[in-house]
Length: 113
Figure 1 (cartoon, one colour):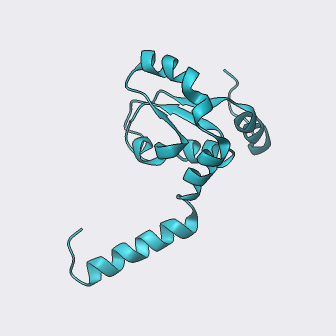
Figure 2 (cartoon, helix red, strand yellow):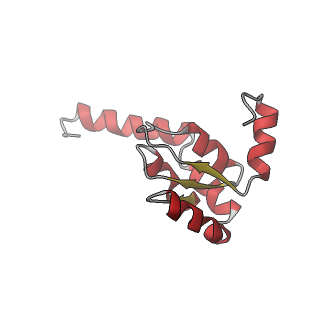
Figure 3 (cartoon, helix red, strand yellow):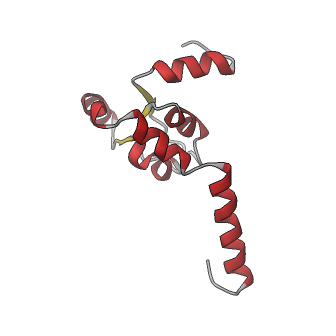
């Protein structure tokens, strides 16, 4: 355990990691840490918990339990840094703003969401 680190140290760890392991089971609503890791090309090994299942997609491997997470470590080579980065870019501020704007227009026009 390292504890809290500043942005530069965190970035160094993420850029040099084989994967970010996320054994979360508390209903993670989004997982900015997952997006940050993928943005620098680092794969994710995670349980499909809360919003993490939506954010990982092509940037990592979703695992059903700890044993499958251990086995998935040998499959990390099939996920390239470019795949991770491309997946992270889906969650840019611009894309999020466009999605909200689209949703607002749907609601204003009377569509159910």
